[in-house]
Image: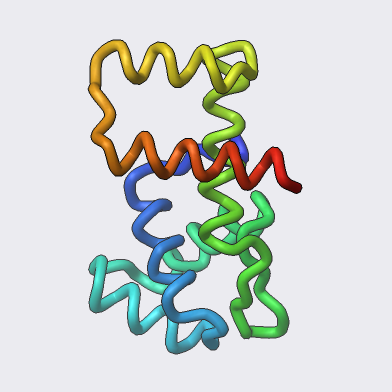
Length: 120
């Protein structure tokens, strides 16, 4: 089990938690029954998986966020680039732009990000 890779239902469940947390486990099981048709045990199994990965915590029946969505997505991106492009962002961008042309707005945003990085 890789920390930043989620299956389809884990991803949907995490999105629900990021949207609703903090939330009591009783309320969470009702939401998951409505949204996914899950039994209580399925909800607890999925919650345990995401808690083991450090995304959420179950504190005496209250589910809280340990890793914000944005931080998780950033870490997942870093892991992907590390695993597939030897940790090189330029290699990733070269591969990405080989098949998909960037629009003017995207190029401007990237330049601004680099400029802001250099200023820091």
